[in-house]
Image 1 (tube, rainbow, N blue to C red):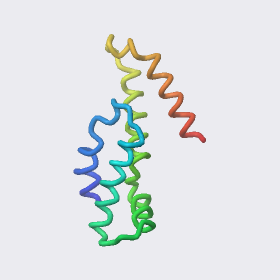
Image 2 (tube, helix red, strand yellow; image 1 turned 180 degrees about the vertical axis):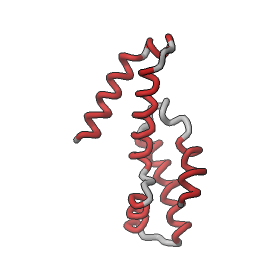
Image 3 (cartoon, helix red, strand yellow; image 1 turned 45 degrees about the horizontal axis):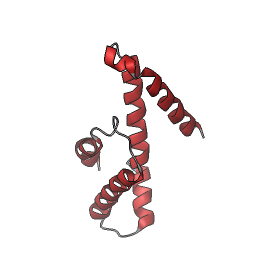
Image 4 (cartoon, one colour; image 1 turned 30 degrees about the horizontal axis):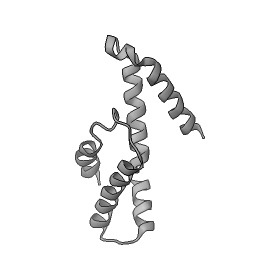
Length: 103
């Protein structure tokens, strides 16, 4: 699982920080992760798959959320004039993400 986390997941998540992620994209990510767990542990149990994803910290929604939050904060602090144009929008999105996180 460490190889999957270090080699495969960054490729799978590449660019999702900058794109809007809807339910369809999230379902696709979860399908891939579920398949990885099912094949690695040779199981069909949904409960076991969910437990493994939680234990190995591979839950798609959590990882995408963390990456997007980190990306937006980096862009917000950038000294680039193009990034400055979108600071207000980023602040709104960051605030919404913080409120979701604290619920």
